[in-house]
Amino acid sequence: MQKYQNSWNGTGTRPILSGMTIPELEEALAGTPGKAPYRARQIFSRISGGACSFEEMTNLPLPLRKELAEQFRIRGIGAVEKQEDRDGTVKLRLGLPGGAAVETVLLSSGPGERLTACLSTQAGCPVACVFCKTGNTGFLRNLEAWEIVEQVLVLSGLVRGRGKQISHIVVMGMGEPLLNLPALRKALEILCDPRGLGFSKRKITVSTSGIYRSILDMAENGPRTELALSITTAREELRRRLMPGSAKNPLDRIKEALKVYQEKQKRRITLETVLLGGINTTEADARALAHFARGLYTLVNLIPWNPVAELRFDNKPLRKPPAEETGRFRRMLEDLGLEVSIRYRRGRGVCGACGQLGTAPVQGDDAAVAALPLLSYRSTTDSGSQPQ
Ligand code: SAH
Ligand code: SF4
Image 1 (cartoon, rainbow, N blue to C red):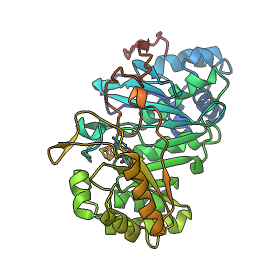
Image 2: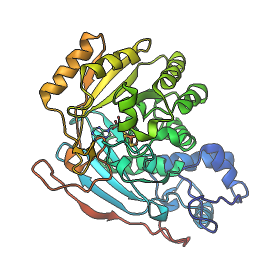
Image 3: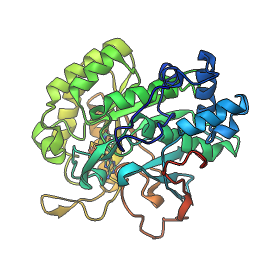
Image 4: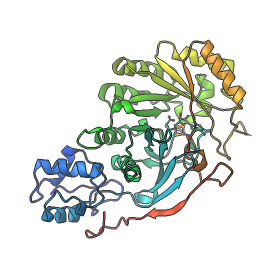
């Protein structure tokens, strides 16, 4: 049997199956008595369907299940901590091997409406945007493909009991996804496989601070998902100060890459603009944004800044723009011919809104937090007889 080694914890640990594609599962199972290519497909579809232990895979012969339990683990995520907001947003804090933790969020657009998983791709973020909680917590490491896939598996498990399904994915959680493109690509390949969860690429949005080489790579090699650029401002100087890690990715290069992407994918690109009161809502910002958008098919999405108490810029605390400032900026953009929307914010009560991930929630008037310290815990020790 093929021995796999997970890069995070060295040798001797049973490999995790949740982050394997079907061909990888076939390879991993090679040599297992009773294996056949269709077994890999069966196992893949059971894992995608939420199976957490081999005992549940009753469609497999008992000796094979026993053998698999000795050789593999299905999932690797450890502790799960859950918080639920009044508006239906659920935030999970997931314990990862090596002591890292990331957050993943389930957004619901209202009763009976669509469910969206908001995924993290890195523990921390090296882009270090001044307005973002994640960017201010430092950068620990890239997530492995299985650590991205399992966010969907865990969130799906929460809603399955209620007869619901997650239909959309936004890669807008912790981290810069395009600095971890190989793992993201593999995770999305697994999540989009019709023999598993079968997500549609059109219902997946990857949000990036603008890593132009990775945008070109996506245009060439996929995944061709919906794309959102977190532009913040199109005034280069100000952008570099607000998003220090973006310096290697100048706006003209980003725009060229977006054109190539759009040429192939033929879909609208979202320009996300977090609105920082008194900083990036001037007429100069509106004009620069309109200039950037020229020649692209775009929607400008304004996101009034979600407060994170300790964050500052130019030695002053950041502030959310008042509604009049947001409205004025919106009108300026529309007068310049841009299509604009304002993002309805959800999850603020659990600090699960954009840019708030990594924050300890503050119990306040709009924070209906049901914090369950340890919802479940699976040991990551290596005993074959333990539940997976
Ligand atoms: N790193 C990726 C994806 C995660 S951030 C990116 O930057 O695109 C997702 C979005 O949240 C980005 O558009 C970012 O500008 C926005 N954001 C960050 N901090 C925010 C905050 N405090 N309030 C509102 N939006 C914020
Ligand atoms: Fe990283 Fe995005 Fe936060 Fe910037 S906004 S620090 S790119 S997660």
